[in-house]
Image: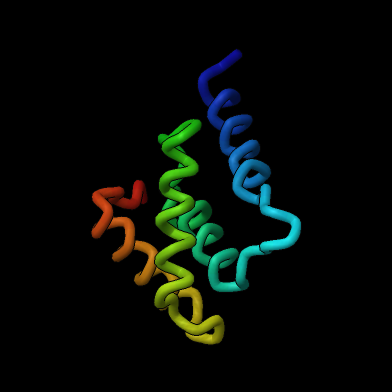
Length: 95
């Protein structure tokens, strides 16, 4: 299999893994938006696998619960917040 195909398959599996939630404890809208921005715009999960995905996800969810921008703040405010959280944690955005 070509390397590009493998990357696409792995990238397609990530959202499914991230979307796994406790049935009685769903993520808040802010937490959902935080991982979506980190995944889609910042591509923060692309180079990670296994436990590293879960660790980054846990950090992002904690940050989003503690002090995320309001949902109506707009995509740019969310991108800025996520990029800042990643820099604080030493996880530089890939784009």
